[in-house]
Length: 368
Image (cartoon, rainbow, N blue to C red; front, side, top):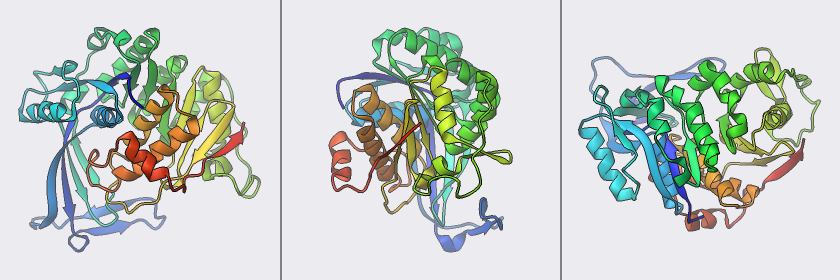
């Protein structure tokens, strides 16, 4: 998994991660068990188990993952003119990332986030996106995309999302393997832009919530309305969850196989969907592969998606068999959740191969 040059586009952050003992934070869960909240007593000073500071952000997490897999990586992101910007540049040198694409915003601070983790270690995150909202279209247009084999467009914040179609079209025109992982805010507010460049993407990766949000716009875009999934028991019980039960849109369950086929019909080469503990799916429009998660003791889930997506992207871009690329991606995501931060667990290729050597990640195939 070596020998390629990559560009990642998106956010760069400084993450402050606080881990608090379970006894010091209460959790309230709704009766339907789909949402829960951490409660902290006002005015009380709480002793933390640890408070650490790390470099993060979608584009940077992906860049570190690709670098450890052997790629030469530049990051197109915007920083402020402050101490956090210097910390990020210093860590770039440690990781061996290119600095020349990092831009400075005179008006915004470097993006930062505070994560508070307790109980099941899913962190509550307070974020100030800062300079990450200030990337401009002309700054993307100025990049020579022809210098890269892989261009990865991670979620873009607020007005920076205007750069998304420019980045995708520029990368595809230059012949780079082009990847996008738009977040829920982009899908909710800018789905026409995403759907309009599907034929310029080699790989689109979204999660189950994002996929459900995209379906109504996709139906309008491609002029198709899928037949909802039937009642429980109407599909093969051996199917992975989303293939069997579909994606919940309003009061209907929309078929995952329809979504994969519809995206392929719009020109998308590869479509991947992550579904938390239920694993991940990958489709080329003819079949769907499903890979389970690798069971590990989890400390935090932040960064697991970036680890999966970046490893899968590099695998497909370098010609690794799709099922093997999924296994490597699942292994890197599993390694990351063993740590509170987003990058400590990222592994080189040999480490990933060792993780999957004992089996336990059977990839299943389903024809569309």
